[in-house]
Image 1: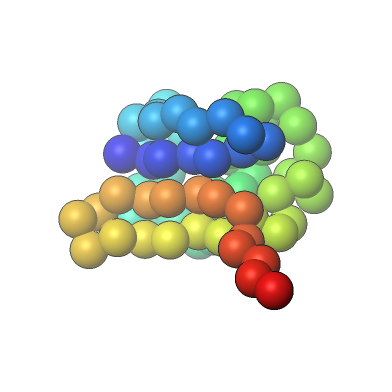
Image 2 (image 1 turned 45 degrees about the vertical axis):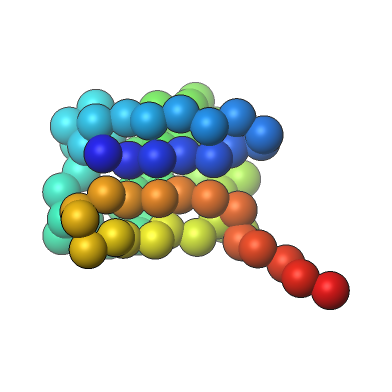
Length: 66
């Protein structure tokens, strides 16, 4: 499962919806998500990809504190 937090929205996608696997690079994941959302990949530059031990992938904005 791919959990996405983008511009205040949260949604889940199956990996096959994006055409990714556990071995897909972070750059390729952002590329495929950009294509899925019909946005420029540049808009995802400050996003973090967190790969959980369960196999889930979380894509979210980078947390900034302070």
